[in-house]
Structure formats: C-alpha cells, structure tokens
Image (cartoon, rainbow, N blue to C red; front, side):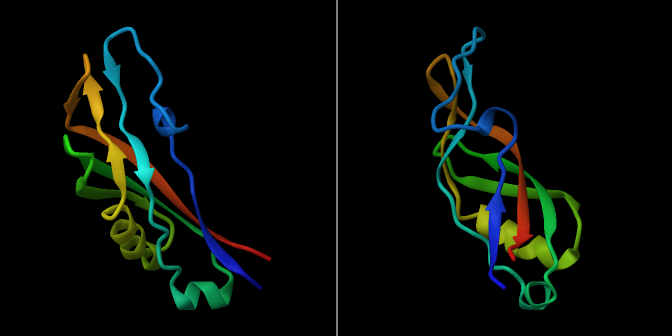
Length: 113
C-alpha cells in the first residue's frame, strides 16, 4: 500500500495566478509547496487525516505564523505545520503593493491503496 499527502487549497488560493478583483486586492498564491511527512504509525495503519491551518503571510511571501484551527488526528498537526512553514507565496497585493495577508489552508493526508 502506498501513502501520499494531498494538498487542497481553499477559496482564492486555487490556481496559479490570483483572480482580478474590483477592490484592487489580490490574494496570495503559492509558488513553492513542501509535502508534509506522513507519520509512520498512521501510514502503517492506513489512517487518513485533515489539518486546517490559518497562515500569516508577510509581504515577501513567507509564512510567518500558523494557527491550527482543526485537526482530525493530533499526529498530523506537527507535520502539517512544519511543511506549511516552508511554503513560499507570491504575496497578496492591494492596488499592486504587496501586503501581509492571512490564508486558511487545509492539508489532507490520504492513505492510498
């Protein structure tokens, strides 16, 4: 049995470029993602899981803070947060100027058959 993490980005983080908005705001867009480590015990047991994390993204596109909002299995929390801290974003903008933003990112761990 093979296991792999699957990332699902919510809301306006989908896609490779931000959607144009009438209010001049552009959401952050991931440009580099890092897969989390799948915990060995959960991997052997075939356990899937979901960790929802709120990330603070600075004007350089770095994740500077994280807050776990929901976790299905505590063993997935640390690997999800550690991976997200390594992500890089094209920062969100307001009228073309980079701004610090927040993004809610669910990290889904899926046991593959």
